[in-house]
Image (cartoon, rainbow, N blue to C red; front, side):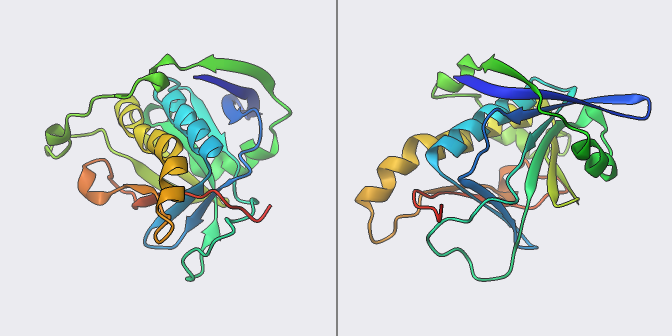
Length: 217
């Protein structure tokens, strides 16, 4: 996979932050906070790009991976009718120890960025990362996602391993969703989930990820 991105740098006091964004807006992608869980609705292109950004987070421990989505239009079909708030998403390695309370200032100082294309050959393999599912449930497992919410942004903090092993959820949506929906008209919903039983969530809520091919704009 060749992933076009924009590299931004923002200074806050003595600290400089490297922020990576997709080169083009992911217009057909929304992340909705429903309090007890989160829903992500994606078309094929958005799912593929997010998979790439997820993999990039695994190998970029000094970067904040920012996916601006909170202003996007929702999909055309009905979504759960309980009130939810649309969010942006930031992916980051736990070793960065970034304080989410600084995000609004950092975000406000980002310029147009420098274009770059990232090569992600691992995205072309069916087994993006082989997970040891039994080890995930050991008490010693530290490869867990933790979430924070600040400035209309969900922060997903994790290790390189947990990002690498969970990118497949988005690849599955991109690869299988478009073929599934047309042949299942009575239930045209292809989805996957970052689930609490998977041994990947620490202080974090489940994220339901669904393919959507029809959008309001």
